[in-house]
Amino acid sequence: MGRRGLFDLERHFAFYGAYHSNPINIFIHILFVWPIFFTGLMLFYYTPSFYSFPKCPCGFNTGLVLNFGFLFALLYAVVYILFDKRAGFLAAFMCFLCWVGASVFAFKLGWTLTWKVVLAAQLFCWTSQFIGHGVFEKRAPALIDNLAQAFLMAPFFVVLEILHALFKYEPYSGFHANVKARIEAEKKVWQDKKEKKSS
Image (tube, rainbow, N blue to C red; front, side, top):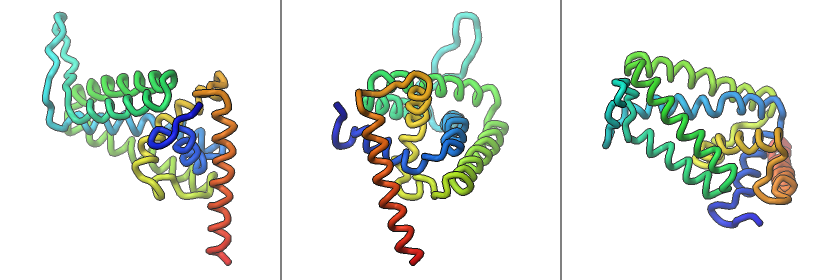
């Protein structure tokens, strides 16, 4: 049975899904959402740190530090677990891997090269997603209507989409049927508003 209120996964998933119903647009988001998260963490690596991990005994320095990048990844991980324990733990593990990988990359590249890599990657990924919405979805991105929800749900949306496509995974029985019904209802409301504006 689904939760209600803040952690109503059906509502959040339906909101995001209403903006991503075209298969090509969904595929574009599957390709580029997590790289946006990863490179964002690379930039967050250069925020003030409150703890630095010591070098490993072999002398290799990963540059891992606890900073706002870590807190950012932790926030996402906790929220995803609260949404759904099974898929949430997988998404949380991916958040942790992204934080470690982004930290190591940023440490090795240095600030001068990191911000250039991040800028190029973010521009490419965001441009691809806007093309997905404009050309294939023919609807503005979810972030136009709800910035926080769109940013928070995007990586988890991708995880749930892949799990459902590969394994027919559902957080609980009937989840996808309920979400599909909500998406169709939300799209109808949007279409009606669009027709009223054009008339």
